[in-house]
Image (tube, rainbow, N blue to C red; front, side, top):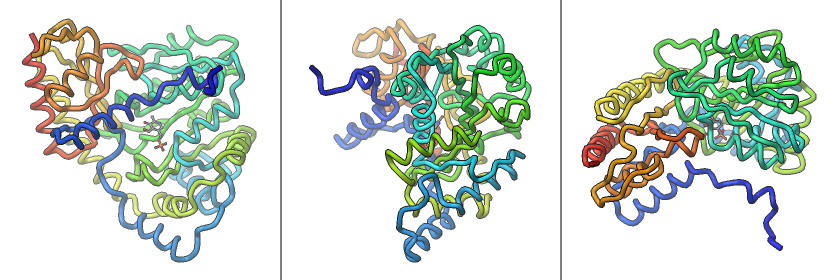
Length: 399
Ligand code: PLP
């Protein structure tokens, strides 16, 4: 009999973390690898946020806090929702966890039963299906093609809802594609959801602030008739370059928020008191950093998209947000690399690129859509320039 639980056997380790790890190992072995696999901003946390953390330590803010977040942080989050999204949540409709991933995990643990279904549009963030499976429920993956901008349509949503559907997960801007849903697209999905009141929505807004070309961010809780069916998850990781601080949060109906906190109370308890103090400053302090940083990301996106589209066999949509692009490598599948190895899948493509030309990206199949790869451009322009040259020369070397 295995010591490992049956549920855990269904779970795979995060493939994006695996690629980052592989790139790290190759680097440690002396190879000049450029990693475009990581899902975190290369910018440092702004100084005003770091100073708030240092102040918290010095002032003895080092004890347990309320399990689901300090009153100061919940107030800052409530004000953020009002200020940026015109959404009113009282502090007992808000919970804070150790990162967005933690909050999603707790939400699924708190609400899913065996046999429940969670609709996940693909390409998806790698953790969604595994978290759903850890909670004992069934992920229902819906492929969203490049032709539909990698976005879920109302028609596709309607076709997969069953009596067992409990949640639909929406993620805009998206990891891995950068795709953003317009207000109209969200309203179209909302119409289907209004006909199915047994279905709730998890809106993962973690990339809210990383948007380009004046794209207008819209989140489904802004539709009043649906607000009580939506849990909106967000956090400071991506917006404020605070991935290591581990603060994420969610807002929704009191009953669900209380249940999330209950899971947390018997697992991790409160997120770090010091990180919470830093997150208060992130939300209440100057927001100048966001637009400066977005401008820099936009330049990189433009460069990466045009460089990739210059390569024969690669096709890359220009997304409105996040720091990822999701180009197709279908035109190169079936070709052979320098060593004579035939590239049968996107995984072969990605592996051969890493081995032969020292660039780490992640295969599309890891995100639920074959024939693509994800490039994270959250790295310096200098590195991106070299990486794009290497990808081009790799693709040209295939025969
Ligand atoms: N949701 C999406 C779509 C993400 O890409 C990530 C991180 O990569 C998260 C949630 C989790 O963020 P956090 O680092 O706050 O746990």
